[in-house]
Amino acid sequence: QVQLVESGGGLVQAGGSLRLSCAASGRSFINWRMAWFRQAPGKEREFVAAVPWNGASTDYSDSVKGRFTISRDNVRSTVFLQMNSLKPEDTAVYYCAVRAPATSQWTYWGQGTQVTVSS
Image 1 (cartoon, rainbow, N blue to C red):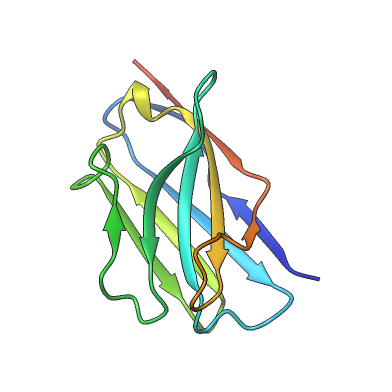
Image 2 (cartoon, rainbow, N blue to C red):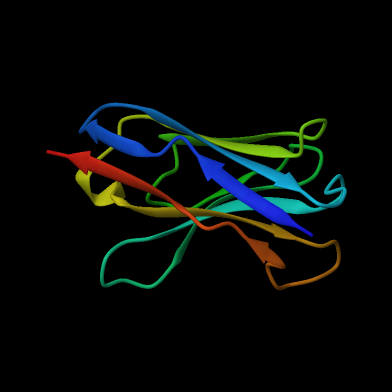
């Protein structure tokens, strides 16, 4: 049974930092793409960042580029999101997701972790 479990969310003041983790289990994800999405209250879920299996060619949304860094540990099947210079508009539930090779849909999703940035 595949599981994605996020952790590391919380309450932080604007300008602060948080590091999110997502541990994947139930199968090998060595060749899978891993990503973070977020959903703010009243808004649709949006893409934040993604990383391929080898850690190269990372992608970021324009709203987080230069402030967030995505990385992964293939030995532990874990993806991280280092979030710096946080802004109130970063407040959302953050979800990790994984996508199988040669597919366009995100296959599995975590339950989400709340990030709240106070002004």
